[in-house]
Length: 351
Image 1 (tube, rainbow, N blue to C red):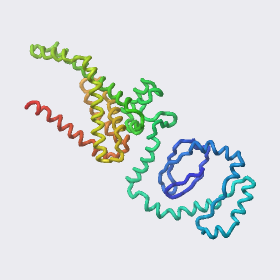
Image 2 (image 1 turned 45 degrees about the vertical axis):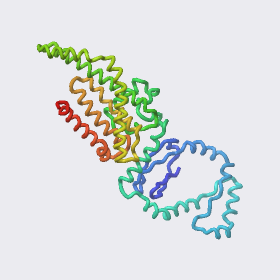
Image 3 (image 1 turned 135 degrees about the vertical axis):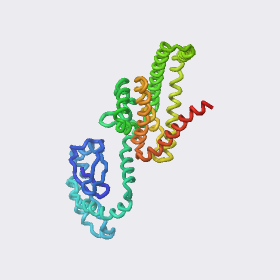
Image 4 (image 1 turned 45 degrees about the horizontal axis):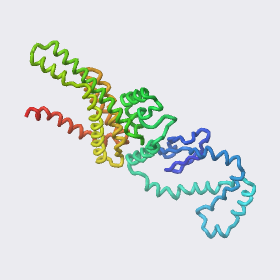
């Protein structure tokens, strides 16, 4: 199988036995060092043995066309090529390909000027073009790479199981965030990511209530002031667990949709061609994985919040194929505004 560089038209033969049908390969041209992708379609794997075994198919192959350098008048006046092609057709052998090789040798000389003019000027444009080529197979709804389903493991419970998909998603978002969010983009339903966010939000609420009740009980056991004891008892009675478990899923869904909408709007302002609401919603939902650290008392919630913010930045960077500069320009103003509002809340409450 011949592989041709789209930039400099450099060709090289590759044994077809070493190529897997349907698999995409990434190649670096030895001449111009440009990177391109190619794949051997599955159709070739089926058709080629039939062509090698059947002489009728090879006899139906038309003779090679006249070179582009010849004029139509010369082709009409000289019937020699067609007469020479007749014995090849009658014998059932494929006509030789020297003329096609000459055409390929002549094509680069004619196309080089136009390709040089159409080539991207900046390294950023070349990176964008390369990332678009890498995104093409990842956008398929049921695309699988080496038998592994596309998207996050949590969205393929039939492949990993419930526990396996949940733990793989947690570990991937926590410790392998770049690779995890690079493959999170897919065309599946967003119900599973929202369910993941709801489960972790409920877990966070349960942990917060557990540590709050424990702290209030210790305060009641050590405090001597009647007002402090009364306040601790009132707070413990106000924590209605069934009501909290009923309200938390609705608030968490609204929170995920709200955050994804704001992030999506900011990303559209920075780079509109990469904005995708479904992918941004997945980033928001899977960035809640650090909330499992709320099980650690006192410092667990603080670490989980900071880790979740870092996951949002990494997720938007790799899931939407943004540069770090554009990711910071899109998300950093939102966190600065949120921090300013939080610092002003005590002053507003004291007024």
